[in-house]
Image (cartoon, rainbow, N blue to C red):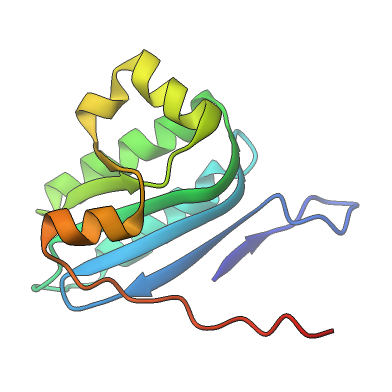
Length: 140
């Protein structure tokens, strides 16, 4: 998991978690994807793509926990798609909702990316078994 802290605060505006299976990797964005945080996502994707993984076919970006996205965030998604395609991977967006879903539609990026409402929908459509998130302990 990669975290980004805003200097002078205790806030974590964004974090990226990674889950892998034999043929797919999921990069889940939690928080704001913007000018100050987009490099965290692209760095995580670049590190992943730098590792030889011959069975890997799908790079899935889970936006279900993403709370904000600006043009830098959109640019990061496009860069990730281009680099993944060069490595022979299909990039899929899942969980885009609210403003993000409208932005993808209005910019035409919903035609550039393969998009699904949820990871479960992508799993069914692509014939994958995606790695699950570990159970979280919510006790204080």
